[in-house]
Amino acid sequence: MASRLGWLFMVVSMWVFVYRLILREEDGLRQTQGESYHAYLKAVPRFWPSFTPRVPSGGSQPRWGQAVAGEMIFWLFGVAVLCFAITLNIKPTGIVFAASFAFYFIVVVPLVKKRRTATSL
Image 1 (cartoon, rainbow, N blue to C red):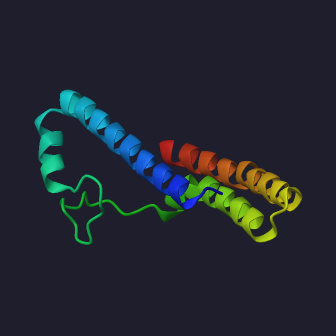
Image 2 (image 1 turned 180 degrees about the vertical axis):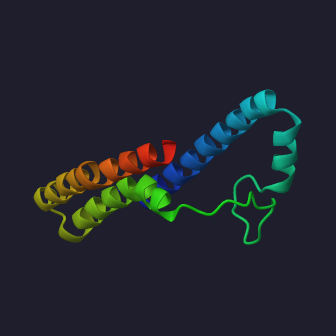
């Protein structure tokens, strides 16, 4: 919903904001984590993902359910935004948005809590 120049300004501004945030967080982690974090920084790219592993595996199995549940709120928000982009009508977008949050808090959150209590026992 911005002009081409406005879009370019927003993209560049967000990139600068995120990059400065990364540098500040790295500095704090360097101070608290010491040499192990410094070695990690040398092995792992800062901004762009790598197609090959850069650090050895920790040996644990991925928990895909936990990963999906953790990102579900963003996907549901994206569905609501997509609904607005398709319909350009706020009413169905609000319905999809409300239904998405209801689904998340009625279905996903209790499942995550149930799994956490089961693993902590």
